[in-house]
Image 1: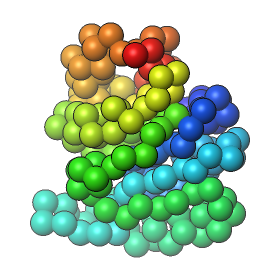
Image 2 (image 1 turned 90 degrees about the vertical axis):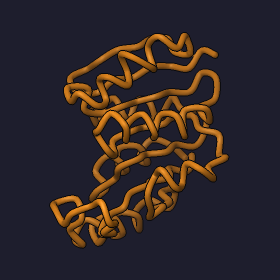
Image 3 (image 1 turned 90 degrees about the horizontal axis):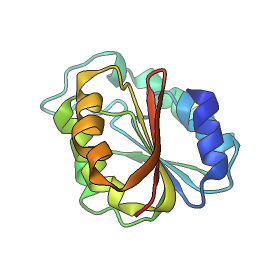
Image 4 (image 1 turned 45 degrees about the vertical axis):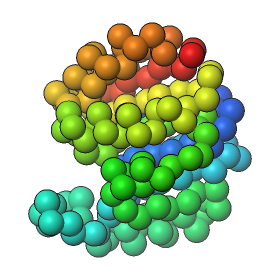
Length: 164
C-alpha cells in the first residue's frame, strides 16, 4: 500500500488529504515524494460521545504523529471529526486518501464531503476495500458515478483517477 501511495503522491498535481492518520505511517509515505501540502485529518486522542476508548484513541498515536510531522514540514495535522471539517473544506485536491471511519455511513460521508474537491486528473484512494463499508461506497457510489477511470484494487487499496 505504501508503495502505491508514494506513487500517487508523486503524480499528484495538487495538495493531498488523508482522512484517518493514526500514528502517521501513511502520512509519511504521502509526504516523502511531494512538495505539496499533505493535510491529515484524524480524531487521534479525542473522545466524542459516540467513540469509546480503543487503540485508535491512544494518546501515543498523536505523540508519534506529531514527532513525525517535525521531519516533514509539508504535513499539516487537522485534529477533528472529518464530518465537521468536511462542511467547511474548500481546498482543491490532487489526491484524497480515505482511511477513517470504515462504516458505510462514515466512508460515504468522507467521499461525499471531500471528493468534489479532487481536481480533474487527481486521484482517489480508499483503504480497506475488504471491509463492507468502503467496498459498498466504491461499488455502489464511486464506480457507477462515471467520474473515475483507471479503477483498480491492489490488495486492500482501491485507487482511481478523476476524469470529470
